Amino acid sequence: MKIAIASGKGGTGKTTISCALAFAATGPVRLLDCDVEEPNSHFFIQPKIEQTETVFSLVPQVDPEKCTGCGECSRVCQFSAIASLGKKTLVFPELCHSCGACARICPTGAIEETQKEIGLLEIGRHGEVEFVSGLMNVGHAMSPPVIRAVKKHALEEGLTLIDCPPGTSCPFVTAVKGCDIALLVTEPTPFGLHDLKLAVETLRELGLPFAVAVNRANGENNRISEYCSEENIPLVLQIPEDRRVAEAYSRGQTLTTVLPELRETLAALPEKLRALTNHSTETRKEREKLAAL
Image (cartoon, rainbow, N blue to C red):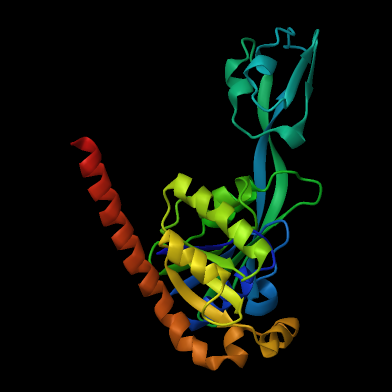
């Protein structure tokens, strides 16, 4: 099972909950830190790094001897990563999405795709918790290729936890895509509610099941619980606002260090989310049957 721990904004506690779930898991578990612009799960997992991998992307390289300046490559590129100026063709690697269209359409074979280093993966473990983290190179603009490289290390058998980047843009979509369910971590503030709504709308567009966890909850009844009730969204976890949690975070300690009573709840959470994915699948099938009538 692959669970994406995500949110519409930063600072809600995605990493706190991801690491706590990893340490509370009762079977094989692997934590993937896909917040590749600013990974921080390693501060809490404290893994022994056993292996590193370089991440590459393909970018076009133009042979001026073969290029006729026909401009076909510029016309086919949807990202303005290549421009034809007369008989001179310019490449802007930072805009390239590595789709390969320019190399395929070039009538003279003047364009060849070459590898460009864009990031690094660190692979290790702490006890029973396996760990993979991605870090994008400074100056590189697009994180999805590095995120996809991290996700290739998801477990085929066992529990995979994906610590997602904040927001609802391309990195968020890349991280949650292909997961069984998303756990949206939020906080009971106006900003938290606003960005939660954006994340909910995005996941509904993607057709991905999701549930909500509230961090720094100031009581069971709050603006998030009211919204979830109105929208019929499962609220599966509420972590109380507690200064001890913040102090433990500042020391690089996990949530269950200061709130051990949550360990049992966290250990049971993956099965609770699995039940929600089964329900979501049944509901989707029922809707498809009704739509076919």
